[in-house]
Length: 401
Image (tube, rainbow, N blue to C red; front, top):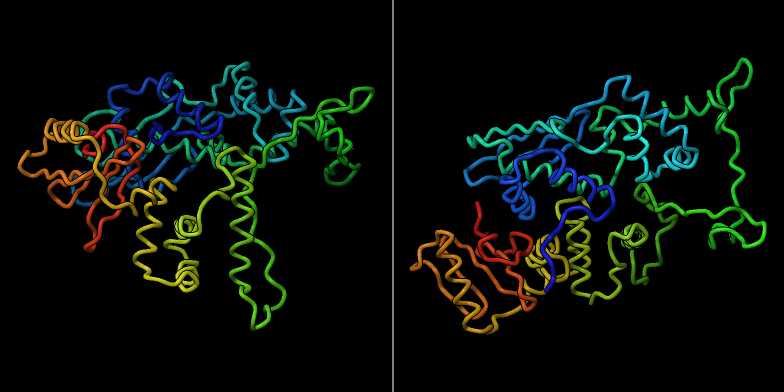
């Protein structure tokens, strides 16, 4: 059986979640509800700044709750110790200056008494909801989604501690220049970088030659996202089956997929059929200026394409499949147990209808059992059923508010 949505697809994201659950001394009884809210995409507009997280969260009442999580920042002495420790390790410093953040930097900082990941008292959640608990489920959800931010850019951890990537690297370069480790000062002039001698391509590929070659080289994973493709220099011929804008969009999509695959975050998605791959591309374009062009090129009803794009956002290819699939008949005992779970969660028995693999509830909510054994929550919006949350293993997880 496939597992539910997890947090942290990279070392940095997983390390954040581990620290949140085991070291930060956040009330463990409040974290499960926060995970559920995060899985159901209740957190909107998450922003990371120096010493704080801000977000809007959808609750069970009308309107949005304002969440602010303060993160303890380092003082100047702590920053000095961190930068000195990293600068002392040539490999770690070189990786940082190249845009890569080696996980061993955590050990470098810990060795001088500074913890990069959150510890006791480092996180101070606040929310505008009436829940007295600390943290409430809304702020706990925000804390979990920091893992997604660190998956995309682990340097955000330093920003939470008080310094941007540029400020961090500037401080590191100064220390390297003072020690003659990669930059040198020209008399009477500015600092200039010494050229990197590099290694032979074959040595880099194989990790060093066996006899007297270059030392083993670890090839870093890609850091920043790929930039935008160069504009198409001329319009294609009138009878071409592609447009300049379409070709540029495909090039950007291919670069993004290659980047994610190189980071180990996703497959190349080359196994998708045409309709599912269109849903994947639509999920990225929905709500952006690229949406009208994609709709025009795809043909068909925009509302249907949007429905499938939303399904992809919540569940990927599996979400699209369950949204497209018609009713089917699972074992009677399975649906009876699901109905009982809904009643135990507070749903009035008379408001529940069982139709094949679908559990229809009041207020236009429907839970559907996928063929992989997971449950999916659908909500009726503008007269059609839309997937509204990532999947869950148990019915009651999709009924929490």
